[in-house]
Picture 1 (cartoon, rainbow, N blue to C red):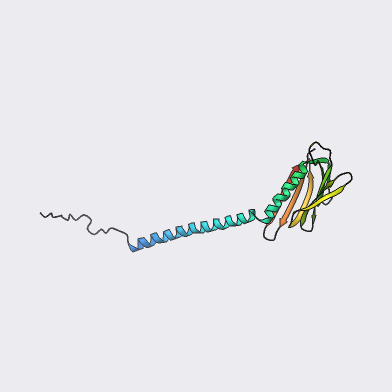
Picture 2 (cartoon, rainbow, N blue to C red):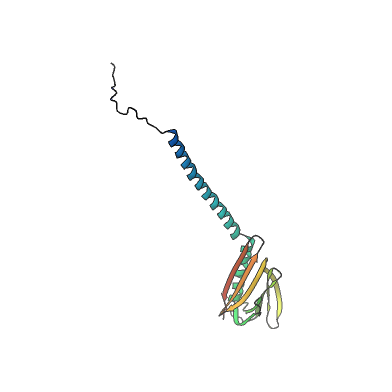
Length: 173
């Protein structure tokens, strides 16, 4: 048995599919979109690497150590024993070495070359017990009094990164 299919004439002259020009335009648009996405990914990767490097740089770590050390000493201090040099380059703070004990210790922050130095000692008689470098690569360090708080403005520069930090800590009494 044979079946004959009749051609009704519908679709004569109409071709299905895409022309070469349509394919080329589609490919061009796709290339532009993929290139734009690639540029965005490359830029964000560079930005992330740069941010990661700055956050984990030596100057960032030293800045954090200096801030925490300064805050720790100031929070144990006595407001009456605060002495800031006239030019603001050094500060001496009298503090309590242990809670409940009388005011018996002092700490002095100052710069020596490019180092921030912390000197600790006892009061009466005033004796220096230790001196340590808190951080290096200090370009500028300024101390000032702000009400019942002491501020340290520290600028670190390790050649690649600059870091400026402002630390403010409230005096104990």
